[in-house]
Image (cartoon, rainbow, N blue to C red):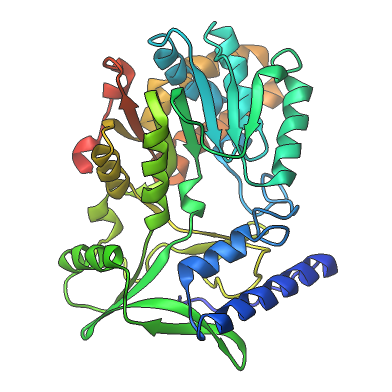
Length: 390
């Protein structure tokens, strides 16, 4: 945590909610003896009912929000993803779609529109969304743009059992709580949050969780004997285990920013990847703006791939986003969109396409991990496959 930033909430009501959340977190710290793991702190900041960042009604996505996702940038993202989905759907007599954390609902709209064109619609498009505010926004957008398909969209509160179809997690795992580890010449400790005279502060303690100890040992082999701060996401591997248990046949696409293990824990990445986002500003102080800012960390795709294999899934592809979208015919889809658009709109779409594909933008920063159960070979996933990096 190197940057010290002071950002004041410019909405008195939002500040009041943040203050309520801070009091709740402080009470929890006191109840637990003065120390709270960062994973628990991050969970409270993001998911406390009515007060957490993803549970309250603040404007998060798109222009004027805190961050912008690929579906908000261009419909071509969802359309190219739908091409991959259609390939899988053709292997299944009947299938459903399940999207985790559907944001504004824009991705669902784009996917369903393209699947309709491809004559590959799912029986149901299921959305597992924890935020009631986002559920309402999704419902309104889908009913506006897809009135004839809206009845296929169903919101869930729990993971379905014996699921057959395609699961999609776009920028979901990066918002799962992470544990923070600090390595030094003396050993490794877990960073947590305590209460100081100035508010919340950092405090380290010995690691107790056996899984964290094992991960710390693997990281130490990678980084050597040096001072080092980084994250471990146990929530993501636990989530993937439950997803694998749910999937009887079909595929899972996990799209997020992250790295394979060797790249994630490079010796020179001494400050980890934890970042916070508030009103399109990025910084690295998670101990401010509780409930008002997003807190994220990159994904260790190797850990997810290993968890998938342990749960009987096939790791069928690992791609940079640009390669995955190109395999999904995004350039052909862009040509079709150009023909539908006036020159001014096409300039916007063209610029968005570059952002999705260019190495310095989302094209290489985001990765796609493809996991399958009981499917035949999917030729598109063989193009520019990088599983060797895992």
